[in-house]
Image 1 (cartoon, rainbow, N blue to C red):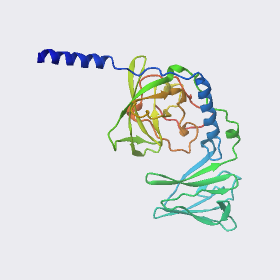
Image 2 (cartoon, one colour):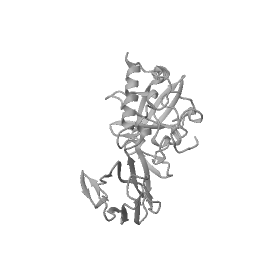
Image 3 (cartoon, rainbow, N blue to C red):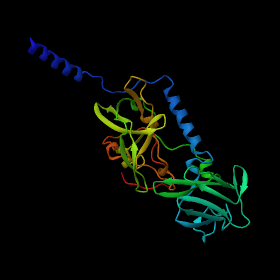
Image 4 (tube, rainbow, N blue to C red):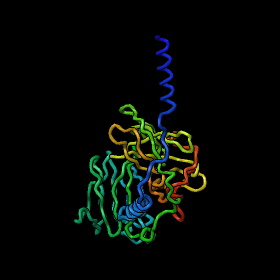
Length: 307
């Protein structure tokens, strides 16, 4: 009797495993195409904001000590010509802090008030400063600190109407099973500067394409999951270093969510050399083509990174 029960239990487990629901194409609302088009327009609007990625005009790595800046070729950090005095001031990087001092006769705007000196990074706050069409502040990348500069006057950004993309297809609106990672799981992620950062990973996403199972490690992305992935289209049609996506966490007690590859988008380094994009982890480089979402930018200078 025990053998019969054991045999029945094993058979049931095998049957259940074989018949477990596999991720497939996810249902879409009737206005799905309109939703994707609205998402595209919102992305265009964000990129064209005064400090959107399209208006990023420089990234200057700070050296310990004094770093002069201005539009002169004699300045350590040369800002765009005609936007600021030739020698406008100095960034002083010392003991992990960054201070800015204006040259004689020059002042900048901080909170709409003129200033001639200001601490730009005290380890807690990184205020932004303006001069004419320019705005800048300090960014930290691991052990490096840099000045990130935006120029709000940019005709090319003004005329931007979106990147080329594949036609929207419901085939790429796919179910994904979310498999949570143990607490405090981190995976190494490398950026375009070659820096490796151990990044929190809440879980793994499992999905199918043409019946084949694929996985993507997810990263924390605020209240959503952040995905960095590469696929076979990177070789010829999409950005060589991969693309990004945000997706929703599964609802409570449900382990399924949706990966919408129609919303896969280019990282900033695809169209602006002054960025520090994260690159896809090795396990997120898929050996399948995903012809959905944004294509490789045209007429935008970017870092050329081989897939």
